[in-house]
Image 1 (cartoon, one colour):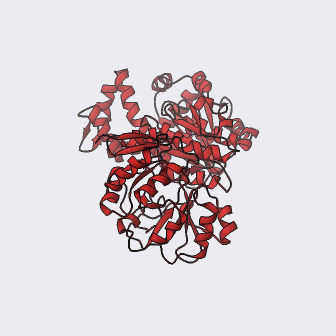
Image 2 (cartoon, helix red, strand yellow):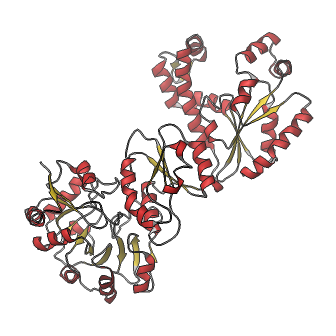
Image 3 (cartoon, one colour):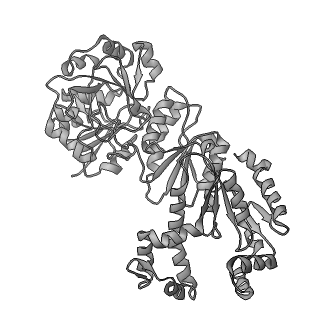
Length: 538
């Protein structure tokens, strides 16, 4: 199929678009909200093409678009007086009303419901197309299902070139997010989706207004919904999106700890300088909601890149149009939100064998903290993690027999080959980090991660603070000989195979030197745990 581009500036475009629609075709149309993918809303075969082109679930209702407010009565019945007042106040405009549907509206348009969503868009070109076609247009947003919505003709072309008949280029959409949807079909008016018309504006006309839980929370998979955008993950780029709440400095600290190359930050214009080290992209000003609604989907489309790992997104607070931005970002993020002030406080503890890390770890445990020993995690995974063992066997054939790792056989391979050791570490470090993340408690708490490979295993970015425990070599040798029952020579060889104390100290935020009595070291640990830095950080 050859997708035709029709210019909104060409006076013949409305006639051409209407003709394609009357022939059962699909045309992307501009509106003040987003571009829509339009077909004859009364023709089941034409409507079916919308679902196929978008990859849209059949239980997701479509919106009927009309050219004049008085057309509402052609497709709806039992219309409450409040609907006429809303139409008078906001049509043409970014408001959709859910009303009882007349029999002429096919069930494929309403997703089998007895109600239909209807609106009159504030776009002269599109209303002319509707009037010339003489039929209402079923028109969901013109993006592929689940992807960020389309706010330019170029966005539509990217998603649907060769998949639809034509695109009407009416320039960038002014509002930038889909219409507000209010359900007037059953008792008290209910806000189903926030948009360009705010809850405050609706209440001025309606008085009472219930905000549906789908506005700010996920909906069960088997739930029946009355409007688009309520049920499925929507507006999402091809990467993980996490909303980072909290004040700017707390958000920066969180992102700094979790950021890895390939991640991005979606932020407000005034925050660009703060997030410069983290590849930021601004989508508007936090003080101007119109810039945020207009810029959100263009930004999410720029971030629609499988090479991006995670997008850390800043989200506006408050009501009004901010609610629409919150809703779209939460849908894109699958409702994953982080408030750094309510996070764990994680201390990463590292240092060579025999330095005395166990003293600090024991004190953290006595304070009610959770201690995660990465050495124990690693050895447990060697016995239980089938995926990790499979990866090891795939890279080093013959070292896993009947699901059991032959550690001596593996050691002969990797300890004589630096490249092989690096490849083994890449497998095991990933598995250990995933298990550490799984072991984090559900409620915010003090946590210690004990790992000699804290930095090699990419665990340090999880930590609020990192601390190196160091000790003179002779003291370490005496401890190892006594603790492990090994020879002095073997103890020396173990110590000298590890990083030096200076290297551990250089990598960490703090250094605790265990060079005196156990009681003296305990005092150092207490001073660290209850010092001003830790108190402020918590």
